[in-house]
Structures are given as structure tokens and as C-alpha cells.
Image (tube, rainbow, N blue to C red; front, side, top):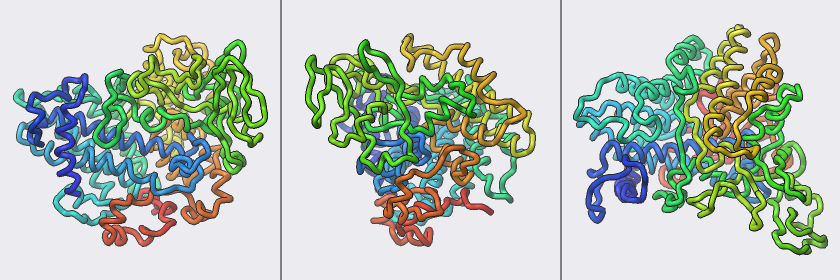
Length: 590
């Protein structure tokens, strides 16, 4: 993987001269003679953060298709195939590429420079991100090059998931050690380069302990290794309020249209926008909609439903209506659906497949009459000032009708809740429930829901927008849901805890980790089932044989083509079609 280092050392420095509004991305050198030595620790950290964020954001979005938060219009695109549990090679590449090529290739140079400067807080950030990145890799692919990765060995050996997992825990402990050290005044302050926590070391420490709690809890299938009290001890030092969360701010900048060195995507926008929010193909599922609209079958709608489900304008007069979710247990995707909607923006009627479409109305441009009702599905698309050169983040048809409102997480300026207080609450609730403390579990569970609502409202309050999708949640709706819609200490269940955690961690890789830990159980995730199309698709069942589940991602073509001997030695089925169904190390019961 040293070939990546040579490529990116040049490309990174070249990118440092591109247009960016943050001073940590500015360096005062001759742009005609760039070299890796000109990148300061503060400049390098900001880009490492960006590329790691893209890796984990892409993985989280694609995990949303696996777990049925999301689905896709009917097509042969990779995300559509993931949604049908018929994965293709295209799923594999981006998280690997952005972590190793964009972030990891710069670790050594940054470590050397930070060590020389005694910039201990940068070393802490580096160890934290390295741990996060390699943990993502083993969550995603299982066995990976680790001990020989990012060095001079062109064909590094693969390490087991256990080796990687333990190494990441050691790295997070090392990060904590560095963050507890005092930097000399000659070292660059962390605030000069930190695009995540603004140089707040206490937040970094909270984040590190939150990661440790998450990862220790992911060992729940390892009876000899899983220690619930260690999870609780880590939680005591993690975020204990919304304000202590690590939340990444993104922005919709009209000048942010250059794109980074790997993709043409803007660099300041949210990763969910870059992965799903900028196109019209991604939809929500009925299962996800049901979690938000009728949780626990109480008929009390979650106040977050309006914000996490997309809206569009229909009819005369125009009226905002919320999208329906696509039923993945139905035959819709085996009957060419769903199909993205079209719109007649003309002042006169038009003809489409033997029918008349009225002026300024929605329709499905297909002769398949079974698909004509697909106009009820609204994509999570947002527009943007930068990428789309639009005047706002609302996607509209040519006559101004709202075609898609976007959702809380899919807008270009949507926050990334990287390691946040709500997740800590739900981890605590799960641990306490499994220890038999139902009262404590309920309190943590309720606090997690409230914290996520509060965290969302922090952003929603910044919009000054009265639309149902962007206006803040009212206290009346919040109180009604918390008091009447989530149950009581007497009827708390693991299912309630895990499904509410699923909502709070929308677009997160951790949701897939949790579903794997609980073996996709319908008792833990009520109403959830494998996609119907999987059950009638031979190709899908070759990759994930019946009776097995979607457990990992097949290795990327770079390893298959250039490191195949080591890859083959890493797992008996590494090169087989059914590798997708084999659990990673922490997902294997012991």
C-alpha cells in the first residue's frame, strides 16, 4: 500500500491549494513546487478528517440499504442491488479507497511531524482516527492488512479481525494518553487544524471513551471477552450531555464546487448528501416509516417523522405531503418498481403512455400501470448552492413546485453525529436491560430519545423555516411522544431500545453492526425481514445462501488483483461468491 502514499503525498499537498474558507486549510508556500514536507500538522489533520469522514459516511449510507432504512429505485446500480441483498463489487471500494488513499497514506508523515513538534494533541487525534478507520475496515471487510499496512510492503499480509480489533482498542487508549498530555507552547494548537471539535480536547476525550464503549459493547457475542461493567465504565467518561457530543458541522457553500482529489464531490457538504442526497434515486422504506409513525403500535407519531421522511408538493392548490415508505417485503421491486417520478411543468396537458397528464402534476413515465402509483414515494434528494448552483437546498421542479424537501441528514449542511450522547444512552440502556435493571434501562432509553430530539432541534432551530421538514419540533409533540408513545419502565424491551437506537443512528454503520450482533432478529427488530426479492433471486442466494445473512462486504478489486495470495490465505472463502455471508470476528459467537 506504499504506492498510495506516494500518490497521495503529492495529491494532498496539491489539494491544499484549492479554494477553502477555513484557515486550517491554508498554507503559505509556492503552489508551483509542492512537496509533502510543506503540509503542516494542522493542514494535514483537516484533510485526514475529511477523508475518514467520507469513508465512514459512505459505509453508513450503504449500510442503510442493508438494514432497510433506505431503498433505491429499480435499477442495476450498486445501491439498488444492496437493497435487494444481491450485492455487487461496486459496494466495496469507496470506504477502503477513502480511508487508505485519502487518510491512511498521510498517517506516517503527520505522526513524524507531530512527534518532532511535540504536538501531542495532534498525535491523539491521529491515533483516534487510525483506530476509527481500521475498526471500520474490519467491520466492513473482516480480515484486512493491518500490521503491514501503510508501510513499504507492496503486498501486505492480512490480519485477523481479532488482531485489528485489539490494535484499535490499543490505539484509542494511546489517543487518550496523548490528549491528557500538555503540549509545549511551540506546538501548533489543536484548534488550528481540528475541523471536528474545534480543538476542544475535552470533547476529543469524550469521543474516545464513547468509541471505546461502542467497541467494547460490540463484543457481546464473545462470552469470555464481553464485560458489561467495562462498557459502563467507559460510558461514565464519554459524553453525558448533548453539548459534549462530537458533531461535525457541514456547509452549503456556493464556491465549494471544485471537488476533492478522489471524487468530484464538494468537500464542505455532508457525506450523506454526497452519497445519497444529491440524487433522486434513494427512498425510505416502509419499515423505517413505521418506526417513526406508529412506534410500539400506540398510534402516536414520533415528532422526528416530519424531519427524517421527505416531503413534496402535490395538487391544486399545492399542498405539502410526506413520502410513503417502500415495502421491501412486497413484490414491488420484482415488478419494475419503484420508479422515480416525472412532472408536467407545462401549462397544458401532455400525453404519457396512453393517458393524459394534467398541467403541473406528477406522473410516472411508464406503460406499466402498476407503477403509476409510485408518485407517493419521494426521494431524499436535496438541492444545493454549491454542487447544484441552486438558490437553496430545496429541490424543485421548473415551475417552483417542491419536488423533494430533503431530510434532516441528507441536506448539504446536515450535521454528522459522529460520536454523540444519544448513542451513549442507548448503549447504557442495552447493557442495563441485559443485566436485568429495567428501571435503569428505561431511564437511559428515554434520555436517548430525548437527547436525539434535542440534538436535531439544535440544527432545526438554525433554519428559520416554517416548512414541516425544517421547522423545529414543538415541545407539545415532544412531550406527548415521550410521555405516551414510548412505553413505561414496566414494559421496556430490548426491541424498543434497539429500534430507537436505530432511528438515532440513521445513516450509521453501527446500525448494521447491531443488527449483526442480534442476528437480524425480528424479535429485536419487530417487522423487519429480508427483502422479498432476495427470496426469489438465485444470484442473491448464491452470495448469501438461504438461512444466512448479509454479514460483511467482499474485498475490493485492488486486493483481489494485486494481493490475491495474502487475501486467499486470510479466509477459506475469501475469493468465493458467498463471502458476503460469513461473519466478521466480533460477530462470531464464542
